[in-house]
Picture 1 (cartoon, rainbow, N blue to C red):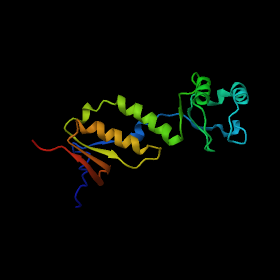
Picture 2 (cartoon, rainbow, N blue to C red):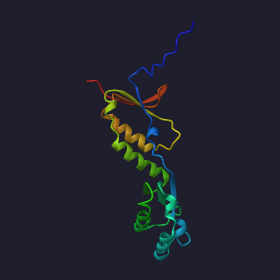
Picture 3 (spheres, one colour):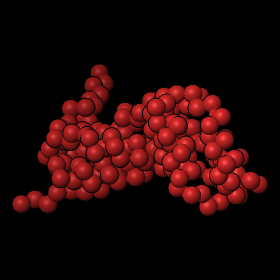
Length: 170
């Protein structure tokens, strides 16, 4: 008779954190303002304000919006502020930058509010593979936060993890 296969990971004190589980649901939109610039390079205030006032902002309802300009034009801060004021009552969050920067800001907020006390004196694996965009910055922030409580921190999967931190024995 064959031996029973036992999942030792499931029976260990090892805790796995999958940041994908914390992924905030909602549409992500990259909003490029280049089309509101003269030849994609020059912001003319009067025309820009007209674009802002006539734009259909409701298409961003409950979305996360990343404002940027793909042409490298120098955009005055007030232009992004003007757009953000229109998006504030509609979008979930508006930031200046690309979608990766948006994800980083979202996860910074999530991790700052995480209660990590349940990981006190335990070995922890921060799961590495995900299907949703978990930024590298989130992994860094989480490992820094866990360092104060966890016995050890690893990265990857239980079957093949990379050691990141181990508390010194006293």
